[in-house]
Length: 279
Image (spheres, rainbow, N blue to C red):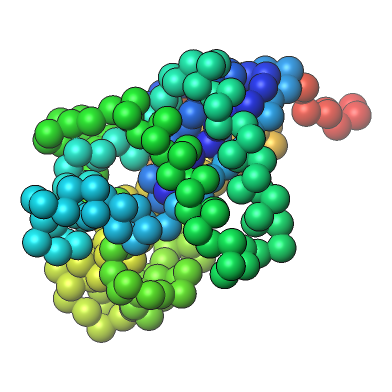
């Protein structure tokens, strides 16, 4: 999970919530594997706090220890009550001012890797930041919007390397990324790693927080956004190059992932015209 604190300046942000302006006093909260892009409006300064989901689950477990039996209960509570994968929290300039010295100290502690003897200081600083931000997060008792997801990121095992949990999931992710323009299906991907389709969905979602097809959509939208920004190709050509032969379908998927239509994203993100070839 990421908490992006806007310290100065402003930017236009694109994500599943659409297109929003952020300035001093705003905190952008993103779940893992959530696309988010930004274009500075003049200039912008931010500090990003990265939190492992297992750490967050532990905090939630002890916060509500009287009502939970185990960490799985805490994980389900987190997914249900904080289900939006992307949101902007407007905490205001005064509260943002409180965060600045804590964020500066956290950054200093993290420069060369956090030493074990400074763990409790870092944890105290993180808790102070969360104490200011979390009360302002959007909370829901049920998943009611198209952007909310039943599974966001993996919650087990307790100690893990920063890579997918299963080799099958990693392999499927490599296959998808290697051929974005291919018409992938879950049965085809499952066959490639010798799993049933239902097994693959469970394994892949546990590793990446998305189904294989949702993950493919995310990568296509990300690639399409890059091409819209750096090339002068038509939207239909770019859509086809990432695997979406129907421009209308591509536009809907892009808007759902990035928050704005492809044409609007290109207009906003292209600060200067691309050079043209001499005649």
